[in-house]
Length: 202
Image 1 (cartoon, rainbow, N blue to C red):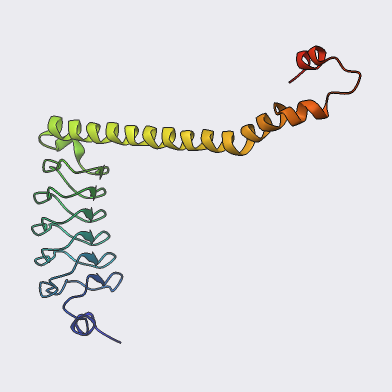
Image 2 (image 1 turned 180 degrees about the vertical axis):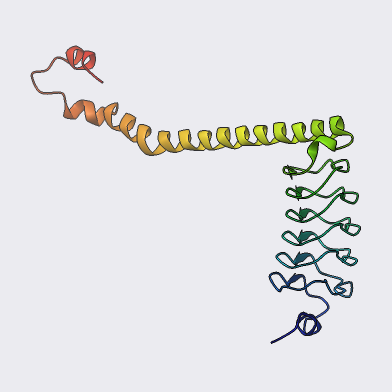
């Protein structure tokens, strides 16, 4: 059976994605030689800590482990799933971070969310003890408001598309049929009075 070390040693140094999830391993090997690594899947293992992460990393899935802390997060990181661990705190969050799932931990504090953060799930933590809660929850509230506006935007956008489709595919053909000169001529008999036909026109 191939070990994780053997698998990693077989990978080229310019690889962009590594998946070592669900391996039952207790420690993450050093990955700093993978300079172009952008996506790391290491969930469903038994890690209690992680080594230094590659600086170009953008997506980190390390949920369902036994992590008690995280190393310094790369500045390019955009997505972090670290839920279902034993984390008591988080390091400073990168300004590029857009999505953070840190629920089901032992967090008693959270760092200030970055401005680019769009999605935050931090339930099932000792949330009542979180410091700077006013700043944090105002940021969460702003994220929720933004999501509501995003939802409204797409509803209105697709409503416009639907109305356009309904007009072009359903209503316009009926209008062209019912209110065209051809329709009038076809429904005007030799004995019919034009004014009467127009009065009864749909």
